[in-house]
Length: 296
Image (cartoon, rainbow, N blue to C red; front, top):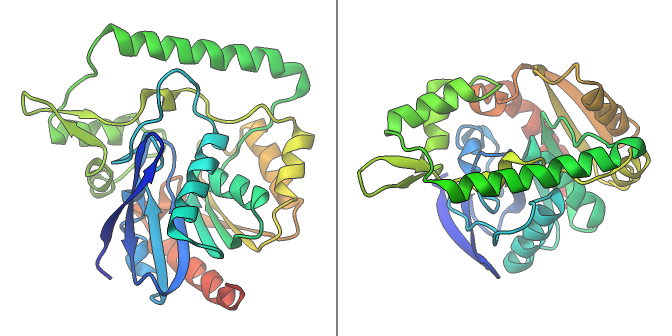
């Protein structure tokens, strides 16, 4: 399957996407993680079964997609609306979703809000969102408001750092909590950089992505959302996740387990197993997609 590029108009610009397969095939929407881009699926998609039309989206502020207008915090709800705009533009009624990390959270919330659209969901090491206990609401809201203002001041005070392409690859490999292989970092860099006049490059991502993007949901609210998911869910957990012992993450996974439609499977690898070692999860996803194919 040779990938193709498409562009989807939205009120603030465009959403870029890479497609694999034929548009007449069964539809699968793929959503990447925070500060990544749709290239994160470049190694996985070729290992997945043909007969599906995979549309891998650069969510706003990532990859080649336009940034949201300035002045507000970007949340999961913003991304869910962006997904709805994409599927409405494509005139998709029923489809499947694959989401990694934040992309899994977006797909999960979308599936809860629009259950009539999603027939099955694959979540790849999606460790959240973490519920906010009622007594922590004020502290949490103050933190994200201050975080946004701090980022805005930094953006206004000077130019972003510049790198050679190899330096940018090194940055991705050394500063990411879950380690990428060099070949994986090279894949992500393809859609992560903008050229500068001096021949160097800067990262193109929206700096607001460094501020927490989750909503203020108590455990009870979060459980109501997760339990509204009606379709089958394959939740793949990486064995080497640096956040797996976090109490908030443990609570989030417990909430997902409360939904009988969710099947949680542990896989060998770190948070980016789909990119570093896609062969470790491809068969699981293929079996799941094929078993649910008749429900499209």
